[in-house]
Length: 369
Ligand SMILES: NC(=O)c1ccc[n+]([C@@H]2O[C@H](COP(=O)([O-])OP(=O)(O)OC[C@H]3O[C@@H](n4cnc5c(N)ncnc54)[C@H](O)[C@@H]3O)[C@@H](O)[C@H]2O)c1
Ligand SMILES: [Zn+2]
Ligand SMILES: [Zn+2]
Image 1: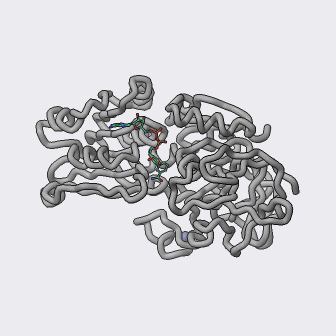
Image 2: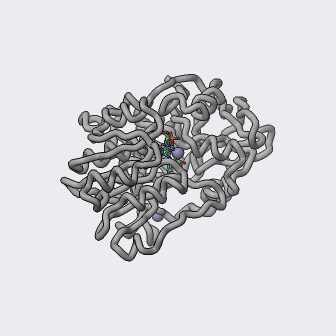
Image 3: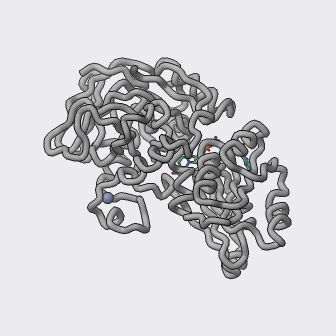
């Protein structure tokens, strides 16, 4: 079939919205009519050419939601008509990582996905007979996508898909960092560095876990206001004194849980320094620049602080994305404030410009009705 899609033809140049060929889903795959897709930093990072593992041409986009239209042979997990959220972090439920409760890093299709192929090593996307690679196993800046069934979370049909798409990456990454990676305990003190999509999700996750005090630090007053709306109890400007202030506010000890959601290694260090002696856990969500390293004073670790990373919030996508969407439907997660702009696929480059200007939290591409 013919589909309109936003193609990254060359790094550091605008995406080109054009008509491509999309082949039918093969065994273990589904065709999804995309309804909405959020525009995330990872899309921009790849488009810019900064990601050393990036490739082109490809159809970007990974924060998608839509409706299954058709399935290939042997597909049992989803059926036509199902409402789904795409998972750049799939869940096969069979590999050694899926069988462990300790990680969400499914191994099943990792290698092919990283190289831009579907699990059988080919692509469904092409232009004039030349294959176009898939991005993050999803390629959702498009009207339709063919996706492995293990990379689709079936969500309640009650959930509006133009909100549910945020659970495909940014929001789940933040919520999950607090709920699953850190597993914040009720009554805790938390400190969240960064109040973009991810940091705001962390704030909401800390609230849902029953944290007593949630400190949020950011450069932007507007974003701190949004953090307050998500449950932050203390909102502080990032003025270089955040660590001192966290220590002061906690009797000199530090916060039980700290989170970094900026992508800056200097802030990762601040987050570790603000974690409590004895048991403070620092969770790193941000993706640092190529070649950057985190500078840690070992004494901080010996005295009981721990640091860990979180990919997609530790969320096991097929099991837990539907649960997070249920929490939203029950009114426990306020999704609307994250959506700052809505636009058609043709304006995807404008969404990138808004993101670079830190204008709003998320732009949503409206792909079909
Ligand atoms: N781990 C994952 O699976 C995953 C998934 C999605 C995104 N990410 C990464 O998470 C990070 C955050 O993503 P986002 O979409 O929320 O980004 P964003 O740019 O919208 O938000 C970052 C925020 O950090 C703030 N900030 C900048 N300097 C600061 C400082 N010194 N102290 C405190 N705050 C500061 C900015 O004002 C901004 O609000 C990025 O690095 C992104 O690549 C990771
Ligand atoms: Zn993302
Ligand atoms: Zn797996």
